Image (tube, rainbow, N blue to C red; front, side):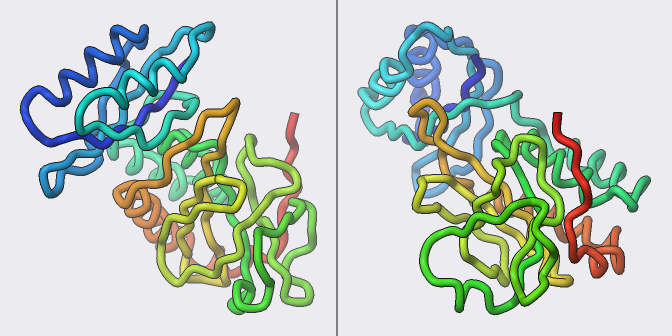
Length: 247
């Protein structure tokens, strides 16, 4: 299976090689390495690896944690290797080429770009977080849009759970969140009609996913801002979920 492994390590010569060797000894075949951050003598790196399904991931985590100065931030299943920013431009071109389906195109593509489980576009009333109490709220994708000031799922990707669990937040800016179910979220507002893009990673088979790094949140925010410019007034019409066929 394909795994994403995020580690924080000392930003010094040889540290990356130690991590790579440990991954190899544990049985992981490295597919890609992405440097997310280098700051204050520390680095945050994402490794995409092919991992033997029969092997225990705990062995991999223990081996990495034994390296001096290395911290394992998360290990989670990935549906594909992370892709570069060049794919963002290609995605936005697809949104512009078919604006009628632009929102769905964006939502379906984002999980693959960021090694996430699912994404959804939700229409959220401005005071929802302030009045809705504590904890996430489940919302079915066929729930009517914003009648009585309630949130609604406008579009969700094919791996989104049903009913969808939305964290109670009305974001004025893009940010990362951790839900009480240990799910990791990144949310970014479109700046129109209360529409918010939500991207999620969850714990699967005991593998805790890493939270969304600031660079990942920034990337989501840039995609959302660009899509909002491309789609314009069309976003003001997103008040009820379309019929979505799931097989």
